[in-house]
Each structure stands twice: as structure tokens, then as C-alpha cells.
Amino acid sequence: MNKITFTLNGQRKTALLESPDTTVLQYLRASGWVGTKEGCAEGDCGACTVALMVQNEAGKAEYQAVNSCLMPLGALAGQEMITVEGVSPDADVHDVTSLHPVQQMMVETGGSQCGYCTPGFIMSMFAAYYRNGGGDASDRDVEGNLCRCTGYLPIRKALAELDAPTADDPFVHKLEQPSLTSQPTFSPTDTGFVYPTTLAEVFEVLEAQPDAVLIAGATDLGVDMNDGRLSAQTLISLEHVTELKALEVSEDAVTIGAGVTLSQLEHLHLFPALSTMISWFASRQIRNRATIGGNIATASPIGDLPPVLLAYDAIITIASKDGTRELALSDFFQGYRQTALEPGDIINQVRIPRQKIPKKKTANASTRLSQSYKVGKRGTDDISIVA
Ligand code: FES
Ligand code: FES
Image (tube, helix red, strand yellow):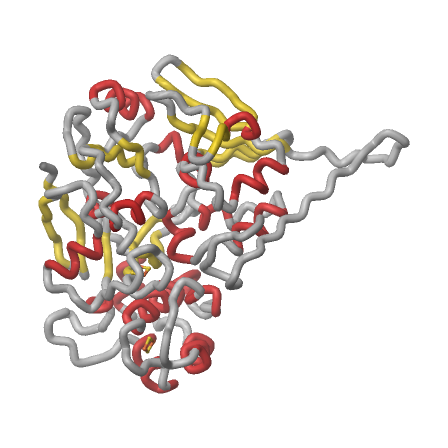
């Protein structure tokens, strides 16, 4: 049984992983941190939103909103998390007398009635409040939060009227001096959660424990966990495998590590149809955790990225202990939730060829146009009926 350590609202915590399918939300509520709510347990309502301090692609610390209902507790190892109990500027989270500016604004605009959704909204807004020094929070930051009674107008007003944080804001200081979180240790025979840092270590675990399940952002697997459909004894966390995080842009192609998150991909503006689809992909909380490799590997018929990647003739690299092989994405999907992955295989990279625009128009020069569309019942935070 693993023991993990992490930081929760500024306090160092240790937790025993009694089962790999315990979620962060279940842990929080069982430990008395009941400000964080459960609505759907599927990533659809945002009531469970918490903030993680992560390093962005520029190497700077930032707060990201995530769904705690979909995050396995094991994935919290070495991370720093803030819940609604921890946003007050008061140092003692158990004796809070002052509100965070985001909470204050929600009070002033009347953005809360029954209050059930409010902690989730507060945490999404909290993460947005500090992004890029503040001042650019928008409706898109709460697209993964549902409210059943207030009506969105006062909530949107609260968002729109937020100022940028002041220089003496304690959370600004935290971002400037992030606490050093310790990487979890690796052992290929550990059960529960295993934390490899290289692909070679991933293959070591897969050899020692062939039934172990690979896990990245867990935004799909997390739903199975909540439904009691995950029977694996061991989950192999891919979050610390640096080879899976690389993103390389060359003249001919863009090569994206399978562990690159969709939020990171939002900054890649080379494929307009991909950018359009990512902007409609689930919600901010999901995009902060979901990875491109995960969205392909789950082979879900409602996955939003595969239709676009297929149109772009994407090629995937599959790695195993015997080496790597390339496969056109069109040959990867073999049926409902069935792929060309063999036991011991892992998606390593996704390569999207870049179209060369001919300098001169000639009779046989063709220009390819790509456009993506998503039809769903809601504009955001929904699955595709058609992509
Ligand atoms: Fe609804 Fe987590 S409980 S998104
Ligand atoms: Fe009641 Fe939002 S205030 S659900």
C-alpha cells in the first residue's frame, strides 16, 4: 500500500492509498474538507473543482482548476493543492474571517443562492484570477461549472469585475516561490500507484505487472473509478515521464508527446481546425488534465480529437520495450474501444504533418483546407453528437 505526501492548503499531508481508485474528492470529504462538493462525479458539473499549482510550458508556476472527482488520490503525490477552505488570505484555514477577492466579488454581485455550486465556481475563478498576472478571466474559465439556481448573469458579472491581484497577495508570493514538492519514489513491483519517470521504467512495470493500467490525466478512467468499474490493482502514472511531455515544431511536422495536456496544446496555433476543436473540448478543468495520448488511447467513439487528427493525417509512434513503430492514426482504431496497441505498448508521440503551401500557384499545386465542427447539446462541457 503506497503512502503519498502532498500539500493541502499550505499544510504538508501524508495519506495512505488504501485502493488505487480512491479519488481526491473522496479523500477530501472523508478527511473533513467538505467545502468541496460532489455533484455528478463525472466531470460535468464542476462542484468538485480544486486548484493545483503546476508548472506551465514556460516553466512558471500557475494555478490550474481541476475536477477532484476525476483525479485519483495517487495522482496527488508531490503536488500542491488548494481547496475552497484555503483561499482566504487568513493564515489559519480553520479560523477564517476574511474573504478572498473572488469570494467577495461573488457576494457583491449576488452570485450564490443555495451555494452548492459556489465552491467550485470560486476555485475556477481563483485559478483564473492569478493567470498571467490577472485581469484576463473570462466566461470560458467557468465553462465547466454548472449552477442550477442563481442564473449565470451575476456569476459572469463577478468574473468580469475582478481586478488583478495586488502585489502583496499571499497567493502571488506562493507562485513566485513555489514550495519544493518531492517526486514520488519509483519501484516496479509496487502495487496501487507506480510512478515511473522514464519510458524504460514504464516498460519495467508492464513486464512485472502485465495487468497494470496506464493512467495520465484520468479524465476518462476517473468516471470508471467512480462507477466501480476499475478493477486494476496497479495504476501506472505517466505524469512524471518526461519523454511524454515533449513538443517539437519543425518545418515538416509538429511532434507532440502523448502526455501533453490539451491546455498546453491550446498554445499551439499551427493547426486551426485542431485549435477550434480544443476550444470546444469539455471544460477548462478537463483540458488541464486530459492528454492527447489519452484521448486517442481510450478509443472512445465520442473522443473529440481523433476526427480532427485523422483529417490532418496524424501519425502515432507506439513504443514498447522492443523499440518504436509508427502507425497512421487511420490504422490505429480497430473497433469500439479497440486499438492496435499490443500488451506492453504505449503511445509515445503524435506527429501532425505540416502542409507546405506552394510558393507559386501551378496547375497541379493543391491547397488543402481543414475546418472542424462539433455538434453537441450544449456549447461547452459536452460530448459530441457529431464531430
Ligand atoms: Fe461534478 Fe466533479 S462532481 S465535475
Ligand atoms: Fe445553487 Fe448554484 S447557487 S446551484
